[in-house]
Length: 161
Image (cartoon, rainbow, N blue to C red; front, side):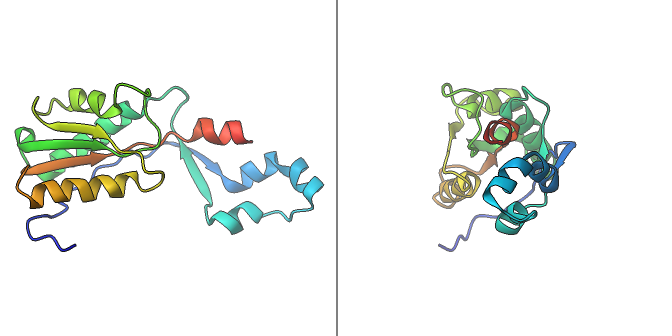
């Protein structure tokens, strides 16, 4: 679809400080690799991922999402009162209910009548959110929207290893 009224105005992000390399994960998997006779470097070869970044244990996705979205809103120069929707598009969320978008909305102090919800579409949650916000803008339902997401993958990696 081609949009005539939609632009990506600004981006904001928060990068975790802790770096965990694929090589470090493979060292932890060495006994398994030996049993299966897998060569070292297999994980990076198959995934293309050299490193991951982790937030501290217990970090809530909403906390980081508020920080990232605030940076994007400030960079956009758009008055926060003009944001008519917020979509949180992550696999990771604070709780099953309420939607993580509720906490982010509250943290950003966006208008009370803004449309807010979570989208979980595996790795495509953010992209799905962008398309949904773009459609709302194109249809004239809102003037501006925020799509944000935070993945806290430490627990998944640790439990998998």
